[in-house]
Image (cartoon, rainbow, N blue to C red):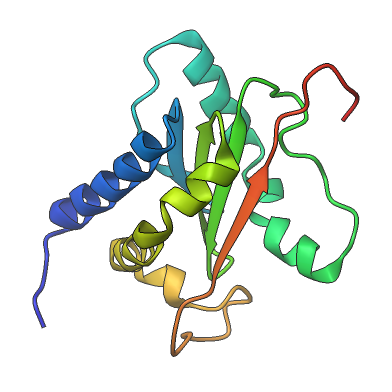
Amino acid sequence: MIFESQSAVRQGLLEVVDAIRTLGQGRYACVLDPRAIVLESPEPADGRSFALRQLLEDRRAAILSIPQTLADEGPMEDAFADWHEDQFLLAFLNQRVALVVACPDAEALKERAAALWPVWADRVLRFDERYRIDPKGRGLLFGSPRLDLVVIGSIHGGEA
């Protein structure tokens, strides 16, 4: 087994996140978990990107609950109700961590990035071993990680 430094693992994850964001002509992408936004591309430089980052930071719990809410077919809080400028592609791994990409066409990005999803999953599992534990904290997940992809379309000029 080859051991990588934490900075090399972080750089590898950042490269795949940046590649996915670039494929979708996205303005911003981040990896978030229940504690925080743990990585972002690019670092927010302008006011709109900072506002988007703040929205995602504030709505982390609602965003991370989306796969379970969809599986339960229950009512879902609209974590993106206040943001109408972008569509969002969400990639959830083991319901513990998510990649959020703000882009103009999330459905197209989902397809374009198909070859990168296993790479992203590999890098994120190397980044933090806690993501290997099942969502209820009961133990390690064995076999293939669970990857859920969700597209959130923008609503222009209508009621959410």
